[in-house]
Image 1: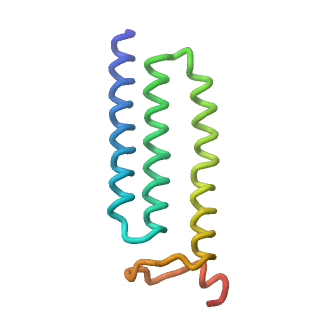
Image 2: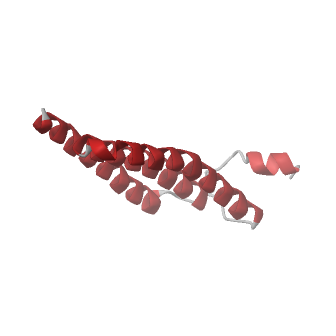
Length: 110
């Protein structure tokens, strides 16, 4: 039974690492800051959660601590990216020429 849990944990660790790697690639490939923030946040959230789940399968006695870390991550990661995007927008961050809709500017009446 322990071997099966180790195998599932290792598979989840590999999937989490793959998502984190793809997030790094997304940071390089996205055209503007806002897309980079979104790519980085979404992939790091999912990649870290999969990694934490993989560790929980390998070390079941750490599950409660890992759950607390996951809950903290789910609350802070999306919120911090949204605040960073608003701050960049407020300071006049450049947008991609492909951006046609700017909801933050619409809210301010620009």
